[in-house]
Amino acid sequence: MAQERIVISSAWGEMRAELADNETARSLLRMLPVTMEMRDHLRQEKTGNLPAPLAETSRQTGFSKGTLGLWTSDHFVIYYRDGQVLQPGIIVLGQVSDDVSIFDRPGSVAVTIERAR
Image (cartoon, rainbow, N blue to C red):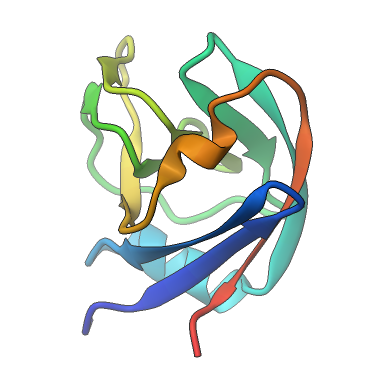
């Protein structure tokens, strides 16, 4: 898959990301556009539930600031800090290319994800 790009927007700002080359990211791309409520978790990430599960691929436990991931088959995550998760890990969906710190604040926010134009 060519580097597909998405836009993640909220009342707090907008950022772009490149999707990973895996079946899970392709499943997400087919679902777009999607809007979901995301909440803060552990002061390292925003999490929200997608409207349907995505295909699952290999997982990893480490992530970096700006990683987009999938915790369970419908649990979307935006990491705004570096860190590690417990097994079974996350499926990496992509990487934010802009400043992800717009999400580094407590509270919930509605987020829309769509293909970049």
